[in-house]
Length: 302
Image 1 (cartoon, rainbow, N blue to C red):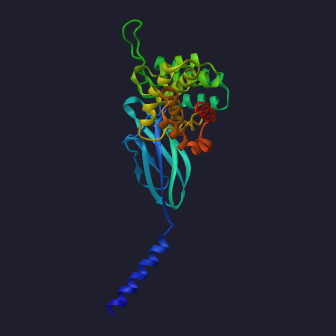
Image 2: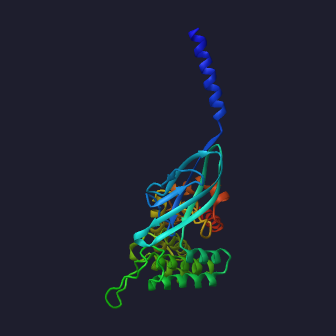
Image 3: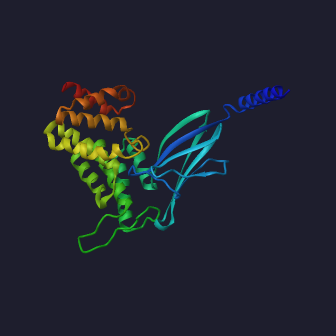
C-alpha cells in the first residue's frame, strides 16, 4: 500500500511538471550609455509591463529576467537626480520557452537620437548640424537632462570638457566625418576631442582604430600599434561591443578581426591568423562589410 501511494505521488508530480513545462522563459540583455560604457546598479531599472518585480543590471550592464511566456513591454529607465538625468527606453518583447538574448540597449539623450537618425539615413550634414547643436547647448549648460551637464570654467583658455553632452556630440561628429563623409583627418580630431577629460569613450576608440588601420596599411607600424591601443581595452571590457542600434552595425567580431589583422601586419603573428580563421564564419555572417574587405587584405598578406 505504501508503495502504491508513492507511485501515485510520482505520477502526480510528473503530471504537474508536464502541465507547467513551457509556460515560462528567460530573457537577458545589456544596457550601455552613448560611450559604450555599461549602465548598471540601482539607478537603472528594467521592469516588464504587468509584472511587479523591478530588475537592475549588474555592474557590467547585464540583466536577466524570468517571466511567464507572453508579450511584454520592456522599459529601461536610468535616473540620476543629482545629475539631472531621467530618461527611458521601451521595447516590445516576447518571452518564449527557454532563453532569449535581447542584445544591447543604448540609452542616449534626445539630441543624440535625432542626430543618429539622420546619420543612419545617410544625411550626414543634418547629423553634423544636430551634433553641433547638442555640443553648443551642453557647453552653455542649457540642457539639464544629461549627466555632468556643465562646462567647467577654469582659468582663461583652460576650460576642460567635463560634460557628456559635448563629448558624445564629438563622437558623433567623428563618425559623420570619418565614415560618413570619408574625411578621416576631421574625424580623428573629433574622436580625440571625445576622449577629453579622461572618459572611456569606447565608440570613439573604435572609430580611431578604423582610421588607424587604414593609415597603417598605407603608412606603417606606428599607426598599426594605434589599432591595438584603441581596440584592446574595448575587447577586454566585460560585455559585447555592438554599435548596431546607433550606427554602422559594428560588433566585437569585427573588432577581433581588425585587431588580428594589425597584429599580423606588425609581427607576422601566426596566432592572429588563427584567430581570424576561427571567426571567419562569424565575419561572413555577422561582420561589417568593411571588416570583410579587411580580411581579404589579410589573405593577401599570407
